Length: 383
Image (cartoon, rainbow, N blue to C red):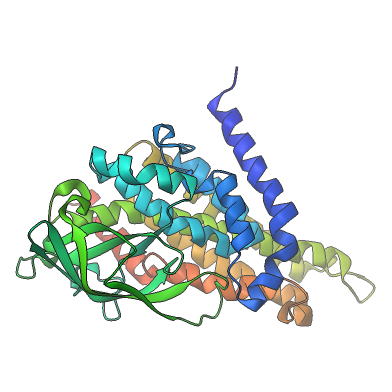
């Protein structure tokens, strides 16, 4: 009899083999060329990962969030950018699954599960990042459509996407402002254009662009859930999944950096013995491994709470905060252990070092995470 644990282990093992055989041999070359990994993305679709968390009735794998976090960790041990191909796509799928109408689910989720549709999340704006309620993109109802105008920034998958989850203001006068935000599912078409590609320190090979909307028409039927003013809550529920994704990414990148460091430490000799036998290096390795394991457990705990259908903004924030800070620290320590080699592109450590800062910024900066965590803790322990 096949158990859910058997299914989880088989899926994670399949992804691990894919990463070892197909991702690791080409990741550095593609990353340094900043080349979109078309062949690898095709394989992600063939493996069913575009439908990772989409219900089986719509053609998806229907993975729980914990299994999805494990999959993300494995992908990021090979190349972190691949997880970005999936993250906003599955955040849109999660919002559709959780808040969409039956008609919206039937219309979009099967194509998202197969990879025919590719999703992007249009949330951040040039002047409004972590402060979501300050967005300026507007959606005005005209007949059977909404007319959207505005610009979005730092949009992952912008060029390859066929579907866009777009946060826009349907009421600019309501107070507090977040109650005026609505979420739309927009299809690629007239009125929506992709602007410049943003050059980045790391996170190469994946599109990060501006998106502009000028009198962009979205049918009334594409208002998520069919009700105005619910967009902020839709976004927040999706961001819980996104922050778990970021935490899992950080665990994967940190694990890869640790693996490089401990292997090198056992091979590199100074003063007549491997540097792994020097106490200074051993202390670094012990701290790195301990923090990675703590980050992994925090991530799984947040994912488990999400799987139980409970609110997990604090837990997801804690996992994202600790895991991303750990990843940055571990990548830096790995570079120090490798010394001069860590600074060259002969080893992937320099890539981990460049990718790590994304996790302390993505899906809400760590400063915002601390504020969210503190606010919720004060509410829980109110006297």
